[in-house]
Image (tube, rainbow, N blue to C red):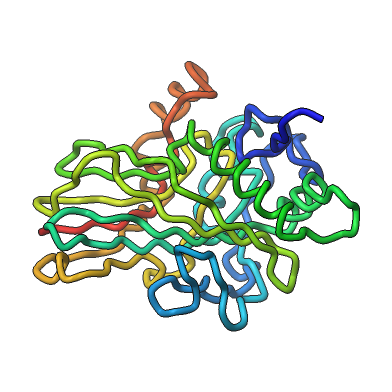
Amino acid sequence: MGKKTMRHAISPLEGEMPGRAEGGVPACSSPTDLAAASLPPSVTSGDISPSRGEIIGSLPRRFALPLVALAFTCLPLPALAHPHIFAEARLEVLAGNDGNLAELHNVWRFDEVFSSSVLLDFDKNTDLKLDAAELAELGETMRNSLADYHYFTTITVNGASFEVQKPDVIHASLDENNQLLVIFAVKPEKPVPLKGRLAFGIYDPSLYTSIDFPTDGDLVVQGAGFAKCQHKVVRPDPDDVISQNSASLTDAFFSDPAGTDMSKLFATRLEVTC
C-alpha cells in the first residue's frame, strides 16, 4: 500500500465529510439549544505533558456547537462556506527567557463525527480502536497535512505576521468517548519579540474547520516574559462583523471561494500588549 493520507484531513480540498447534509446552509440554533461544555485539559496545569502527549485524569464528556460556527452558518453564502469539522481548543502562549516568544501549546478535541471517520480510516486491523502505531500514523498524517495551513496558527506583532515551524510531533489519542484529542507545540520560524501589540489566534481560513475556545480561560499566557504585559481575549460579535462587512464578505467569497480569509474576522484571539 502507498503512503497513508487522510481522506478528511481537515481541508475542503480533501473531500466532504460523511454524515453532514450538503443541501444548504442549516438554520441558526438558539443559544438555549447548545449543550454545556467542560474545559479542555491544560498543558501547564499538569493534565498534559506537551513533550509526551500524556493525558492525566478525566476529560470533558460533551461538546457544545462552536459559537463561531453559528456565525458562519448564518452567513448568506453557499453551503460550502460553513464548517464541517468542529473542535474545542486550548492555547497556551509561552514566553522565553530571552524576551522572545518561546512556543505555543495546542490542545484540540474534535467532534464525534470527524473522530468516527478518523477511526474508520486509520483502524488497519479493524478492531474498532486505534493502537499506538495507528495513532502515531494519524499524528504524522496530521502533522504533514496541516503544514499548508500553518497549523491554523496566526501570530502578529504590531500587524506583522510571523509563521511557525513544523512541530516535532503531533500526539493523537481517543478519549473515553472515542473523541479525537490532539496535542502539539509550535515554535515561531524567527524570533518574535515580546514588545508592542501581539495577537495570537487559531482558526481555519478555509472555514472547513471551526476551532472554538469555550471560555476565556482557554487562551492564556505563561512565563515571566509576560509579567509586565497586559492581555485580553477578543471575541468578535458575529452580527457586528456581518453588518460591517457583508458586501466585502460576499464579494470575496465569490471571487475566490477556496482562498479567502474571511474567518479571521470572526476568530477569537488573544491580544497582548507589552
